[in-house]
Length: 226
Image (cartoon, rainbow, N blue to C red):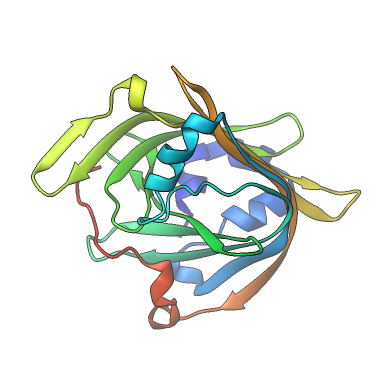
């Protein structure tokens, strides 16, 4: 079964670096997980007044206020079919600061109706973000956040741009260093840069049956509204 990224990119998927293709080509049918471990050379945030915004995301594992250099990092990707029948890929990120381990988690599905990747941020899938994907000149994958919607109980509305956190991400493979590299910048249209990080990691694969996916990698609730 093609992964959600193969479905979304179509013929362009073959333009990705072979190691990026390998990283993104697995689905729930493969019963395996991708684990990356490395170091973020820099984790940063914007001006001091962005800290309350970043701290507000701690409870649902979306943002955090810490900064640092050479921060140990781990990412886990699991593919499974969620209770709503959607092919899903987790993005479980852990940043190990001296005093705290901070989380930046999400689950991705592909909306067949709108032909786009939808990124549900945090533990409760209460923020849904449309993701535009493209292949970069070096064979990396670029992801750009688009429309963002808030989904919580009976509430459902599109976030105005003034409140949006627009991510621009590139992940690529560095042949010379034999590692994956990533750069993330999150901006607000009014405030400017909110936070970001850049660094590298090595990969490993693990055999994982659906029932073996760790509970921390699964959202606490599933949102049907894409």
